[in-house]
View 1 (cartoon, one colour):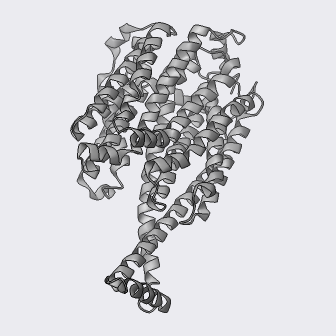
View 2: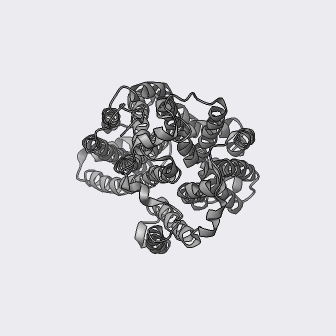
Length: 525
């Protein structure tokens, strides 16, 4: 197993932070922020895009799905491309391409154009994310990891959390076009700085001759189909839909070819050997679960506020801002603790905070508002940072520099796949459990229930006095109440499951090997 000494050997621990590298790194961080933010910034304003382009509800969902499918293919591929082209060339191309694609999205006049432009934007933007993680663990010495790791952890978690807030504000204050136009000027600046300042590595163009094109194709089919099945499965009733069935078969075929080639060819499109490192394997597992927590809760809170409370995207964004603020304020604390605490203890505290926050949500009612959601959101934001910093250090801090490029792509892929799997399970649970609760509640509202009959008579008479069909209106109202209660109960079921998941991770943390040297500074794990 590689040790942190290998990394430390390449970069002296007492080496001062080079200003040029620091500027380049922060430009890369900002590029990553734009790429991750663009997932959620659009999700809060899909209704505005749908109206602007005259699209159907099924079609507009592909504005999000196409981006995610393309991004999930590029993320693991970026490590290989960085070796061939160099970090400077790859990141500059990605930043420039992302900026151009953002401009194209803003000029889209049909849903078909938007879907194509979003796929381009997701694919090119996905290359910026792993590059930042790789740079953080190769250009800075382990002694500086308490500063660098919280920065990338904050950006990776803050961007999707504040996405609904930013998206809601832009679409309300201006128009949906500004969801994309907002990337243009920052994108140009990031591209210019990246091209002129990044000089971390040299290109290895000779590797083009060994590039595994069949591996790339099989990986694209495997990951693209997997993302499609997870995104669309619940809406299409899973394997009862022909497209989901075909997608699943393509996914299996792609997976077989991809894994076969990954272990057989000299230069695989993705090097899976990083998983032989025990800490990287555990770190990736925790990253997968953090993806469920990050994207799952970013989905659940707005869904509750929109469906039960009737909030619009701006009101939802303002309510969700609490989690982002908690993350921002906790980031420096997490950085300081990473040098003083065993990372396992930090993760255990973080997972406990997550479990406590989701447990508090099991008392959910239809009247919960900003103040009832305040403490759970603060716990979520603080816990996210307390978990992410040690997870990043454990997963990537013990790998030799040569492995970090590919490993960072795999590490980020696990978080995205965790989010995709988590959302698929959450959506399926919400649908199935709400149907079950609706059926169970309806059993108690038959004509043999005198309280239900009295309520229908009272409400019906009230509407009769206004010249309406009171009996029909009362039945409609009662059905709406039962639907709302069934959804509330299904939300509680999901929060209960998430509580059990995060509580179980506290026990799993104990299986990680006891870190040697500094607690979390990356000196050794």
